[in-house]
Image 1 (cartoon, rainbow, N blue to C red):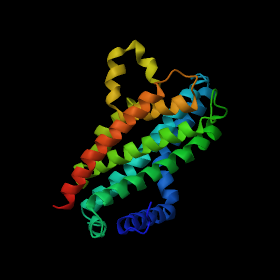
Image 2 (cartoon, rainbow, N blue to C red):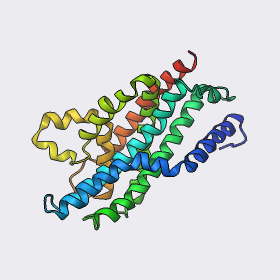
Image 3 (cartoon, one colour):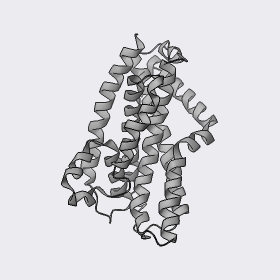
Image 4 (cartoon, one colour):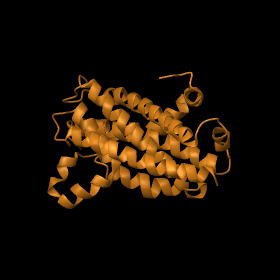
Length: 261
């Protein structure tokens, strides 16, 4: 890669700026994006098993789902929330649009920065989950390349989704994102249960396939806890690549449209 090319140089300059801002606000970023997953692990992965109200082996099902949730939430929020503000009252997006690069490169940099933040959140939650819930039956960290692959694809997919959402809603509708998009995505994203467990409910088994979180959660199960029934990893990667291309296509189109209005 030619780092001296003007477009490439500007891209990495914007990326370094976002990384520097994220590093400065790292405690607040982790608090915002990992608090809910950590509370889920404390309640469902530690308290309930200790009280005998849930099987101890449930932590093997829960950890990949919580990791997927943390990664997805941080990636989508890191892109969508700032964009809503920047296209709204703050107008900070105009500073980025004045950069001497094509507008699509600005959108791409936002997605890359969101992907990196999603990976940071996921890498924070994984050891935290092991610390909170104790030994995880069947945990296979030896599948490191596959784990990283699913995490990168998942973070990039949800970062591109954040681009699409950030261009589609106004600041007055930000609550809509959590109530009608994020909420159902969490409950029907196979986070609390494996997708294969829905064999007994065929309608739901296939209905949830429209939910991108399903593929991240199942990919995490396939790589972290392979002994649990899971979706084929090739299907997971193919679906995430398709959704990434889909969200990027419509997200960058929306970004271009908002940028010229």
